[in-house]
Image (cartoon, rainbow, N blue to C red; front, top):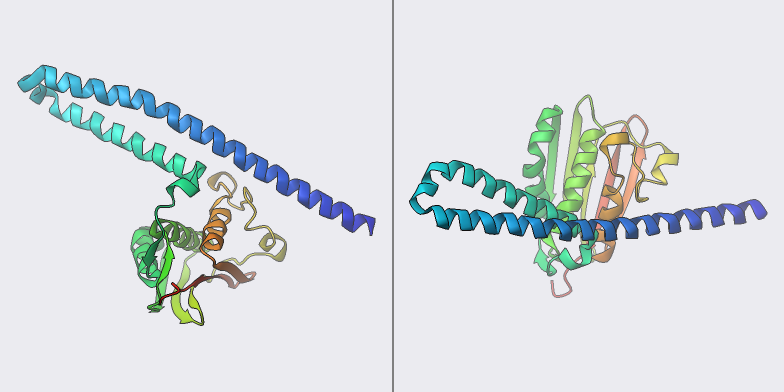
Length: 243
């Protein structure tokens, strides 16, 4: 009927606006990142020149120079992260043969501080040896995002479940929580770009980018959730063909 057709048009328009926004943000971010690179190169160049001109006297300000070096390096890291967001296809790195179970274990170590601070108990069941072909840093990005989402869903503590297992044609891994759960109306939108329930703290891009990464690797990401009981995100990745 007409109402259903109108709703479809509205949804399509909304998706187009979101993709236009993403494209615009990507362009702006890339140009800003490149603009920052130029003055940073000038700062670093002049710092090196000052060092060599001062010779032995540079020792007197060695600590100050070291701090400037550190901050210039920090700006460089931030710029590369901005470019990675704006141009993910250029920065995904060569698709390497990786073992998801190892990456998942690494990610627990990376997020251990947040897990402990939230008073959350972690239950791990790492039971997979399958290898997949994708970028290690991209899979880390997905897993860390899912773990931190689970932590945020348990403001009063709870149990974080992390499991990996081999399955037909690939590997499954799941991140579950005993938190607030996701209402059905919210669940429909969680993979939409810019959709967030964290208000000022969230960009609404975490799950959208995670889904993009997993899909590009030939996999899929799904969620099961019960309000007041918790959620479970499951990721399937296809095994390396020669495995």
